[in-house]
Image 1 (cartoon, chains in turn blue, green):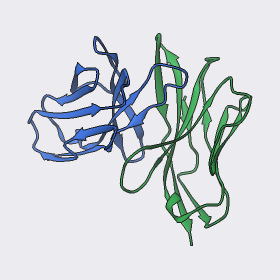
Image 2 (cartoon, chains in turn yellow, green):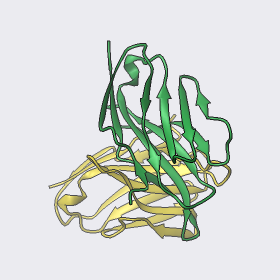
Image 3 (tube, rainbow over the protein chains, first blue to last red):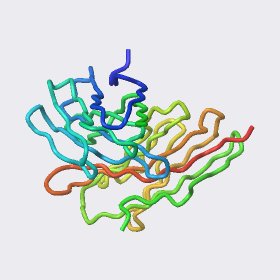
Length: 113
Length: 116
C-alpha cells in the first residue's frame, strides 16, 4: 500500500465550483505539504503544515485554503475554481529531523473548464 | 535570482553510458540540504538522493551519485550505466531556512531520454 495517498487522482470541474483535494499518509510524518506543478515551472509550494496546529502559506497560496484534520490528513480546497488552477497537485510529507526529505503522493490532475 | 537552476531542459544518453545532470543553487545559509527527484511519465515524484551541506563525502545511492561542489554551489546528479527506465524528468531541490521555517525550492527540471 502507498504511504502517501491522494484523492481524487483526476478531476474535471467547472469555473466557480468548490473543490477539495485530500491527502492521507501512513508514514507517521509530522510535516505535510501541498504543491502544484505546471509545465516548465517545476513545483511550487501552496501551503505547508509542520504539525496539526501549525499551517503556513507558501509562495502561491492565493485562491487556496487548507485544513489539517489530523497528523495523517491534510486537505487542499479551491473555494471557487478558475481555469488557471488547472495543474497537477502533489501532497508531500516529511519528518522533522536530519534530512527532512519529502516523500510525495501520486498526484491529482485537476482540470478547471 | 533563481534559487535552483537546471540549465539543461533536455538530455539524451546512450543506454549503458553515464550521464550528468546539472544543478546550481543559491543560498546564504550555511546549513542546507540538496535533493534529486525523478518524475517518470506516469507522474509520481520519486526521491533519489540527498546531500547535506556539511557532508564531506559525495552522496551515493546505487547507480546515482551527487557531485557536490560547495564552492561552486553545484550539486550535479550522475547516473551511471543508464537504463531505458531512467528516461524521465529529473528535479533538483534545495532545503534552506527562510523566515524561521525550513522550505524546499525546486528547479524546473531536466528531461532525460535514454536511447537504446
